Length: 101
Length: 101
Image (tube, rainbow over all chains, first blue to last red; front, side, top):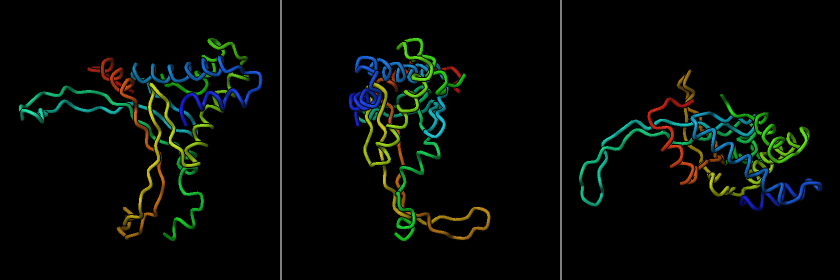
């Protein structure tokens, strides 16, 4: 599913919502989520999951072409942890069958 | 300090002009549709933000850490999130040297 398919789904589900507004709503949500992470803030969506940042300490890397050592500065990377409802839904529907595998 | 559905609804109320009830419903539906797509085995690609992908993991041996008893961890399907290049570089630029959430 892509962003535009999600927009179409939302517009179809809410008769009074025109596609232009659905588009703006999705953009508003995603921008707010990106903005949160960029400012170092967590995102917590009950039942869906949480987004946060993981720290990567500085390290000595190597340029694979020249073999030369380079300092890689510390950085933060976005991280997602699925919530319980999402985890359970995404896992095999028939848990008994999965257990027998 | 944490972004939640309540703040997202508030933003839709302010920026898209939905009423409070519609805004809350739309935020719920947004995450519900993503969850449904994943539960049905589809990858979700939100351009500019990131992709939610599914991974199928085979059964593997595990242990009860309390008793040391060996028990198999059943085969399962899990969600992984990969932030887009755009989000990763924004986070990297802004969060260097600061303390994140």
